[in-house]
Image 1 (cartoon, rainbow, N blue to C red):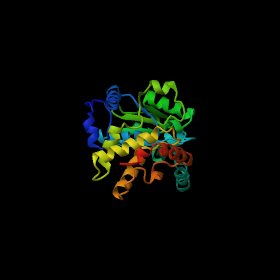
Image 2 (cartoon, rainbow, N blue to C red):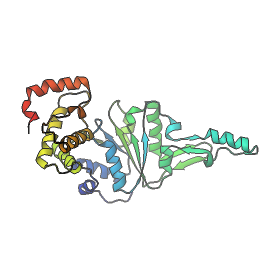
Image 3 (cartoon, helix red, strand yellow):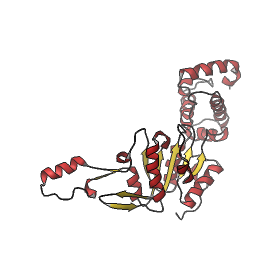
Image 4 (tube, rainbow, N blue to C red):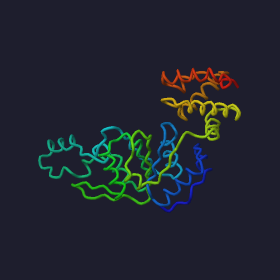
Length: 276
């Protein structure tokens, strides 16, 4: 792909606040024409990064949402059997039922045939090892073979982004074929920028205090630490409805009973954290 380097400011224009390290990795993946594997906790902005990149690079976003049991039929292609049967019923002389007219294209095939797309393989860790092996073959060869139609080769100017929440270990073979970045929860500085960008009329000082409070919660070893999106929703609700305590409406952030117990115990020891 013949593309110039992306600058941090270009990300910010699209309301994404990235670190220099992340931008460098993105540029490396584009230059080397290799898939980009973004791993990290849920809710750190991995999917949003891919969506931002598709807009920034002016590429169509094609998304494959992985899940347990996903297979070739759901990911690459399948034949439209109902349409084939109807064709046989309507035309007894129908000879070829395995043409593109009867083909249902799934995300992998769609991305292979597209000449300018960003292919997002979301939450690859939720799929099983067999599907990962199937995907690995596609990534390595940049092509798909359909026995009845032949081999379809992908374009060189497409970009593939894979995300993983780390719920299972990915194979070394997959990792070797990708440029890798671990996207952790944002720093206080970046989360403050995100809040300022998404919450109208909030001061920088107040946004920073909310960010510090979120950072404190994420260090409590919770089962479900608050995501960046949840933090923004919590700040927006509290700020626009004039709640004056920092820990108001904590249920927007902490959505697990055990976590709320941990929070209550810790906050009682740190009462100063709930004040402005």
